[in-house]
Image (cartoon, rainbow, N blue to C red; front, side, top):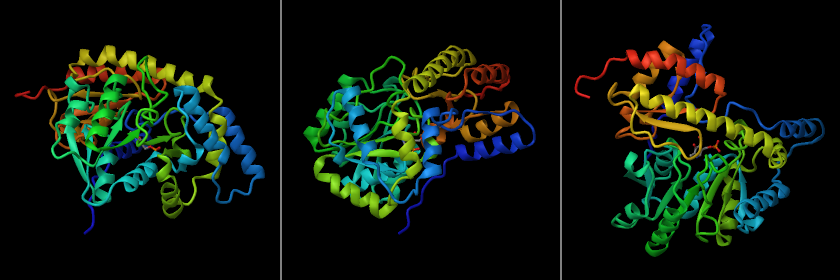
Length: 381
Ligand SMILES: Cc1ncc(COP(=O)(O)O)c(C=O)c1O
């Protein structure tokens, strides 16, 4: 039996956007969830030095693991043994490793719907069963302790994402504690995708490390550290899983890129540059939150973090992919269709990524304001 996975439809929008750019059109890329900024300047300088002087064989940086552990101590007051940290080629392989460390074929794992497309697809690829819990604007698109408690039979596991993709919403600390308690009481294994930690707008995104000693945490240098193409992330597991985590990394992926590891160590000391990106996202968020409702877009849960706004466009379409393709064609603004995040309701949602400059957000608003005003309403919407 071969698993069949869904494509990432935003790639089709992006491909069209790039084709239009090749024709000379000015495109604003709001389709992918990636910072438009590069790695911090001192991190790039460190990479240059390694390129000139290093041999770059297979390697895992002990200093980087210690630095990550120190990061947890400094930012969350949580002690993590560096031996429990595995460096990975981004959060993506870390997620596969986390799932395969905890679950086997047929195991049911709860996820929020809408949610990051890879959760559903990775579970399928590993012959596990995604249990999608519908989460609407009333739930701020997030899983709750009550929803997990109401699942019968109890799933083997749950993946939490806070801040979440595609909505940027955060699970408040007291709700997170309640979820951890439901997991403990019902024997549900928790995997927390903390990839958007560091990018919050006043809300507290608390790490589950220190709350649940059995939790597995996935994280990455792709978002806050602005290094998506460097392909570096990490996995934190309970001590009893550390050896099997290393075995998975070694067998499936060997080591992460050496250049990235050297650069990432330096990136931890670039707070000023990285915080200036977060300040840009905060400004962009304000602009979009003020504007989108005026265009009739609904269902918006103001994002607590990450760099996304997820909005209901059901009054205009029941085919979000066709809508995004039309929008990029006619305005040059690329976005992601909701079907990537929610196979049931996503046909009437759109996700804007605002990880671009504020000038580009202003330009996107200027283009989209008249365009949305001119879109015909669906007759029965
Ligand atoms: C929620 C979430 N998890 C994981 C990833 C994968 O990130 P990476 O493999 O670049 O670390 C992404 C990428 O967009 C994401 O949004």
